[in-house]
Length: 458
Image (cartoon, rainbow, N blue to C red; front, side, top):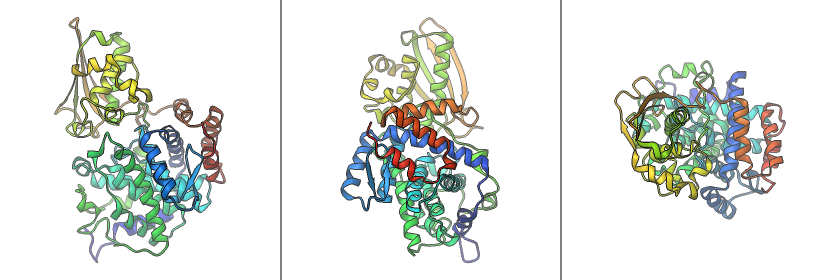
């Protein structure tokens, strides 16, 4: 725990953020993450939560210095980050990291795009800034989880705020001391509750993490000060937010030497629902294809999960699409009924689908003590399908398509991007944006992407 005799964690973080040399494999991973996140941001820009945030940004925003994706609007840097971060998280289609227990890219990309426009930098700078922000999120995640997440904190909004500040600080060219100050301010802004899952506040918290990261960096850059022990002090982030560990230990030595974005990787979502549903969705789709059963054939489906999953998937009988994303019952029933789970699944017609509704009482989720013993939280399930003809199938599934162990192909990423982007911009513009992002490290101005995607109505 921090005192006058120890080097503050934030000092070590600041050195890393300001001086880290990002290796090529990390940049490649970051490029894919930025591409994926821009796509889901465009898709999410039409969601009610994103529209409402833009309405307030339009009324209250500052000088129009930064673009808002999917609409012909610009706003102040913080408001643009809030709007883009909320849209990125609105569909719960954005990526996941099971080390930080967060959606890393929504706040990092939202803050990064805004800060990159302010700094007038190019694609390589954005990628490097994304990487240092990701690593800060990851080291905090290793220190804080699983207790932090289990106690109800929404890690995207907590560790994500500090990570977003790191990304913004790097892009704004801050030295180590100023970058440390940016993250200290961000640590004091960090907040977000899992109780909000299934409501508009869940994506808002992703947006707030991006906005607060930008704000923290701008304040620190102007000379604003904060406690150097805001992370590891006796009343700092780690203690206050029920972290598993209260000091860095040897984690500081790993920064810049071990790159979590490469070694641990990012989970790319292929279904727009909570990541905890994905192993089960995958297995039900596979069983359905293998044994060719239909909804009418199914007597019951039982899903065994770890003890944390029921604290995340809290809506057994969802009444909205947002709740449906956090319902194992609804996602499983949809997979059984239709052999797919997509954006339309969580729209009004999908939610009201009579076949799915009829299946809901036949879906059951329970804690299985054998699940999650040697696997990351939320990543394993035991799926049992019992058919009316007496047949029964039981499978244990670890991970899902899109996980680092089963990464999406470039073609799958491109298809997802196009499907998402074309919900907000014309097909031609979506194609141009995809090509631009595939060559991100060679782009001289990040603002060029914002010009392309902030000015053309669908």
